[in-house]
Every structure is written in C-alpha cells, then in structure tokens.
Amino acid sequence: MILPYTQEAYQLFHEGAIALAEVEHNGIRIDTEYLDNAIATQTARIERLKNRLQKSEVTEIWKNYYKGRTNLNSNDQLGYVLFEIMKYECPELTATGRFKTDEDNLSLVDHPFVKDYLKIKKLEKSLATNLIGIRREVVDGFMHPFFNLHTTVTFRSSSDSPNFQNIPVRNESVKKLVRQAIIARPGRRIVELDYSGIEVAIAACYHKDPTMMSYLKDKSKDMHRDMAMQSYMMPIEEMTNPISQEDNARIKKIRYCGKNMFVFPQFYGDWFLKCAKNLWNAMIQLELKKRDGTPFKEHLYENGITELGEFDPRDKPKKGTFIHHLQEVEKDFWNVRFPIYNKWRKDWFYAYQEKGWMLTKTGFICQGMGERNQIINYPVQGSAFHCLLKSLITLQNRLKKLKMKSLIIGQIHDSIVSDVPDEELDDFLHLAHQITVDELKQQWKWIIAPLEIEAEVTPVDGNWYQKKEMKIE
DNA sequence: TAATGCAGCGCC
DNA sequence: AAAGGGCGCTGCATTA
Image (tube, rainbow, N blue to C red):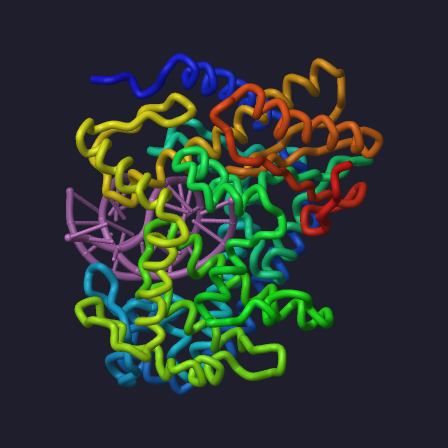
C-alpha cells in the first residue's frame, strides 16, 4: 500500500484546510430582503406558468392516462406521454432504458407545451437549489459554504451547504436572479481572481507539447479560433479583423463553438461523433454565418458537405458528411497538431496500467481502478486546483501579515472570491497578481507554461452580478 | 417513514 | 481500443 501523498502534498492540504476553514468562517454576505422577495416572486411566476400549462392538450392527454397518479413534475410520465402516447420520436434512452427527457432531447419535440415545460424546469431549478438553498443557510445575513479537501478522487476541492461552486453564470437571466443576492460588505467590493485557461496550461506542464507551448506563449495565436475555423472550414479572413461590433460578436460565437464543442471535449476524451453532432446543432441553433451572411450550412454545402451523416457508432462515416469531416479534423488534431500531447496520453496511461498508480506534479498519488479518460485527466485537474490552493494560502497569510482588511470568502476551482475594502483595491490586486503568478512560479519550478490571472470587480456596495473585468496594472 | 438509486442540471 | 473529466443538489420512484 502506497500513501496517497508525499510530504509536500500533505503540507499543502494541511495549510489548505486551515486557510479554507478561515474562508468558511469569513462567510458571504447575503441580501436577505432581496432573496425573500425573489423567492416570493419566482414562486408566483412558476405558479402562473404552470396554470398556463394546464390548458394544453398535452396535459389533457396526460391526466387522461395517469388519472389520480398524475404528476406534472414527473419526467417518467412526460416521456411516456410524449414518446409513447403522442408518438413523438425519442432519439435517446437513459442508461436504464427509460425515455430520455433532458433539455437536448425535449427541444427536438415541436410542441408549445415542451417550451413552457422546459422554461418552468429551469426556473424551478434555480428557485429550489439557489434561492431557497442559499436562504436556508443564511445566519445573521451571511452564508458559510463548506470547502472540502477530502471528498474527491482527483484531489480537487468540493463545496456544499450550499455548493458555492455551481452558482448560475451562463444563463443571463438566472445569473442575475441569483447573483444579485450575493453582496459585498458595506464600503467594499467583491473581487474575483480567475486563472485563465489553467487546465490547459497545467496539462502542458505534463506533456510539454511544443505546439501547445507556442499557443500559450504567443498571444497572437488562438487554439480555439483555429479549431473553430478547421471544424467549419472557415478561411482565416472570416475569423480575423472584424469590420464591426456585430462582426466581432459573430466571430466570438464561432470561436465559442470551437472551444466548447471541439477543443475541451477532445481534451476530456470525447470523440468526433459527438463533436460533430454538437457543432452541427450549434451551427443551426446559433445561426452561424459568414461575414456576407451566408449560413454555415450553405457554406459547408459549397465545400462538399451535404449533411451531418448517420449518428451510429457502428457505421463508418461516409464521405461528404460532417461526421466524416470531423473524423479527419480529429485525426489532424492529435496526429499532426499535437502529436507530443498525444504521445504523453498514451505513455501516461500505459505507465499507470503497469504500476497501478500515478504521481502528480503536486505530489499526490492516485491509485485504484481508472478508465483511460480518467487517468489522463486526474493529474491535470488536481494540479490545476493545487495552483489555486497554494496561491490562496499565500494570499491569505500575506493579507494578515500586512494587516489588510480584505477577506477571502470563497473559491471555485480556478478562482478566488474576496471581499475587499474600496481603499485596498489597488494594493489587493497588485498583491494578488504577484502571488498567484510570480511567486507561484518561483515556488513550483515544474510550472513551465505561462500563468495569467484576470480580475472581475463589483462596484462598492455592489452585488456579484455586477462584476466587471478590471485590468491589473 | 427513511434510505437509496436515477435522472437531470448547475458549475469548473 | 474506446469514445466527456470532476463535483453537489433536487425531485421522483422504488426499496427497506
């Protein structure tokens, strides 16, 4: 039996546990009046939407079949009504063979009922988990989420009661609804420091792929943009030198797809079949187009790609389909663009299979049964978080030593959330940059990729929804 | 009535 | 060759 850590790793978690205990103790200020109001408003709103749903023919069919057992919140029942009784096509089943009723699947059902149903589900989720979930934990105007170091297989952290690491941010209206409840202490601002792209950088410290290194070091290069271009067969002119704000937004949208539907999924071990499907759907849903307004679908047609192709893992992709094209893009990605990264994945997994354990850059030992995708992800995920944790410990100690009033109040894997008096803002940002970038690289020589942090800051007496990017001098 | 598994979905 | 990594919370359905 091998101990799951080295002395340095033990030291990191020892100090980390103490630092996070203090973070928990500091707590996060909550606007309880707003929160109570929001809970009442949202409850009423959901009620109204549910009443509207009562008038739908789907509800009629539903009640007719289930009678007294009718539960309009039951996904099982919904699946039966839509896909069995009403004969809509159900493209996927769950692991246990039930009708899959997630957002993706339901969106394909063309019926106004489903639109309202999904909207209600989204509202109920944020009401129950975030609004009521936070309210339950508030004492004297503060909540104190737990930050655990002993719960995950990757040696990352977790958070609970409430989970501070999954508060809505991507959906604008839900983000606003929830984050307005989280406020700065009087005379202060909430400051969030975020390591940008740290998992990619830490992965590079393991595999040392020269192409990846140059992507990370050369600011004019952009991996996500390049993969968006290649996936959608866009020439470089279409993705550079925007001619207007709208054009810039158009380029951003395309890049977003390359990043979140190709690059990251590929790093986590996904494959071309799913990437192709997601990129294809996004292209239609987000109405991606060329600068002259040509829809991507037409553009692809002009380039010999006429359809998505069969989504069947047993089929060999046919030429002229988008799936076939993505298979080529994937091959190129791993064999031509990042062959050293690819070799590292192979070697790392092989070594693990031989030994049954692996040692991370930060001195942790992962052991036990693991699939290939887990084995190549764990070291990166864990070590990236450890950069954050080490920085957090140093920052907290330094703040106290300097007798500053700034408080660290939370942590979200690659970001630190603080509550900072207005008069300390400049000092705080400067200190944070020095610790998280310069000092960390001096302490951990294995960090050979560039580290960067970004700061987002709320107004004085503001709420978390109001955070805006602020350049660090 | 309490515990458990599943599905779904929020975040990095 | 196989085919998306890591969490926590909620509600439903079933089991103990």
